[in-house]
Length: 493
Image (cartoon, rainbow, N blue to C red; front, side, top):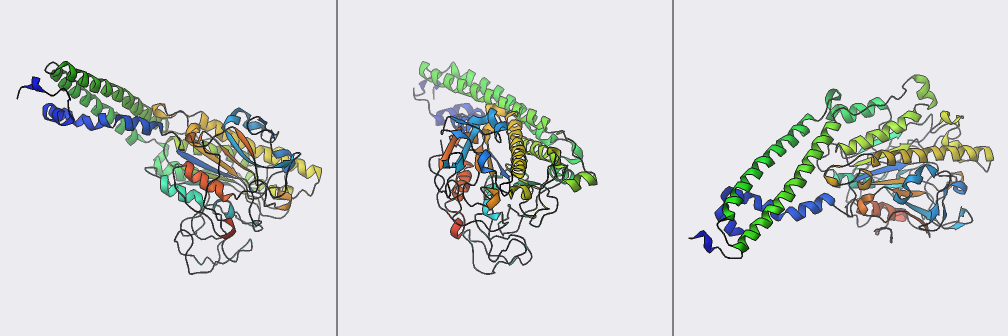
């Protein structure tokens, strides 16, 4: 057959006959548009952080003022000002500067005394009193998982918390499904777990610098070394691409002179598409190689570990930014896609809970949250909440500073941060006006830069929304009074 008799409609079958091995590139060419779309992945978040702050907030100084899109952050939230356009504040309706009773993110019934599972699990185990408790064996929960008899567990639930539901769905090639960190309390009577495995078992939080560092980087990067295999793989991929490029250009070019003008246009289009694909693929591989090299020796900041710092809680001042650094590094190195941090635990009477002696006083957060209107205690409550807000802003800054390969923006662009609490006003363990703030670029999923004043709204809707933002379909979540079957309306982009 004379090659000049090709149809002016040059088909994939024709090219496969004439190009031989070079035709192997055609599937990549046909998938080129799909790959570029996958790299951008608009409308879905890739990374997720849960930040749990117990003991509510001082409502009189916490909430912003202004309108939905033209609002001013309070002095407590001032550290977040540079990222105000990356905030979605789920606030209550206000009377003056105080929440209207029963508005905003509101649990239908008050959360039990010191049980945090309601925050991420939207369910409470049967018979819990705030200390050791028992759940009734037998039956199944809403996820088809059997109830467990955890006679000595603290705050047991039935089934996984939402972070674990998401983590199991998005883990992919990451070695860790999730990483859970926690600032330790001083004293205290309630561990108040928030992370639960599918069988309802509480997941341990890493609470010391050594524990966290050795577990995360000791397993993946032995001896503090880097992911050399990842760098070598990227280099190998670049060499393979170069070899394939040379083959394709040679075969396509030799064929070009033997076909009609129409067919030459088709081949030229394929060659142009191939060059564009190659450029983007090379950029992605170079970015991955650079990223892997940056992950070789992550910087470790110093955290005091002497007995006095641990006894007084002074170590938390450095522990918190240390954990935030680890999250940014873990995301950058694809060690995990889901993480959580807890700022102490809620229980402890007047002597237990997280302490912040660097602020000039040693009162635990739990004690100052029960301020009883005392202006001195209220001011301490404000200072402690302001410090936590600063740590949230610090995480945002760290994520914004990390560029992702392939023109995908920054880690912040692709991350959703869910900053949440168990109570509204801590003084009365309020079940309404529960402070929940979403931060980050969220992959474009949420419409950010807004302060919403909501009617009474089940916080479980927020959990479903977060799962949806990560591309995880959760048709229903929660149990009994905490259950829901729909995300928050009007917050998606």
